Length: 210
Picture 1 (cartoon, rainbow, N blue to C red):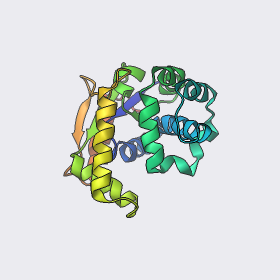
Picture 2: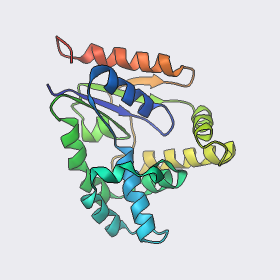
Picture 3: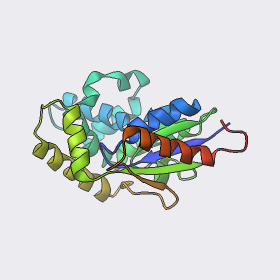
């Protein structure tokens, strides 16, 4: 069976938590596509001593291996900012496109979360969701994850800056697919958001289920 679940949305809206839960519930493979860009961004920064060279970033993307996605450094605020910058580079996006497309249509089904899954990577996905939340709520969630390493004001400013970059870039801007379910998690508990997502995905399964 080939069945693709595309989950898009801005940072800290809950799409990763939802994506992992959907994949676990239905026995589907899961890919956090943001890790691809984080891995490229962090390596580009390290190789360039703090500067991202577009041509070298594209080369890193072409050489990316699954093990590169396991680095603890990929969960840092520095990695998040670097990911947003390299994601705006058409050469990097092109280098990672095939990897993501193959994963999306793998046998047995797959869940991918990112910012352009339902619009670019898997426009024909059987199930699509766009997960969002207010800026303030997302900032509070991200600040809590960072355990006080940044102030709420700093996190909010970074989230808004990233949203602007992701939505305004020329290459595959972040946008909700026309046929995606809009899931606003601002006032939802994790359990309620996950339940709503799973219900939607199950409704899109072919007769007989996964």
